[in-house]
Amino acid sequence: MRHEHPVRLRWSDPDMLGHVNHARALSLLEDARLALGDDHTGGGLILARLGVDYLRQLYYRVGEELCVHSWVTRMGTKSFTMRQELAQDGEVAIRADVVLVVFDFAANASRAMTDGERAHWSRYLEG
Image (cartoon, rainbow, N blue to C red):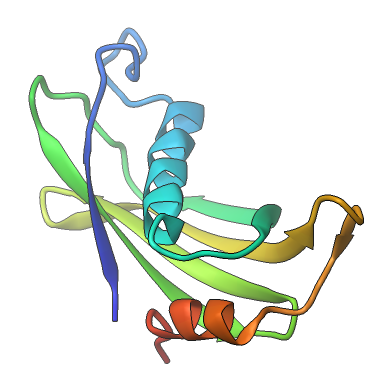
C-alpha cells in the first residue's frame, strides 16, 4: 500500500526563477515521512541514507497542492528502505530512496524492530 501525503508549496520554496529549491523539496519529503510514522508507537527512527534523483524541474505555483507518495521497498531486522516520489503535472519530479534505522536513543544504538513496528511498516511494503 502506498501512503499519500498532500503538500503545499510554500512562498519560501522557490528560487528567483520560480523553481523549487532542491533542499526545500527534501523538506516536503520529510514532512511525508513524519506523517507516515504518526500513527505508530515505538522508538525513534534515524535517517541513515538519502539518495535523491531530481528528474524534472519543480515549479512554485501559488496555492498548488501536490502529493508525496511513499512506500517501503525493503524490510530488514533493524532498518527498512522507503521510496518517495513527488510529482507535478502528472510526472515524477523527485524520487528518493531513504534508509531508516530503528534507534534506541537512550542506548545510542540501533535495535531490532518490535513486532508492532514491523507490522506498521509492513503495511506499506511493495515489490
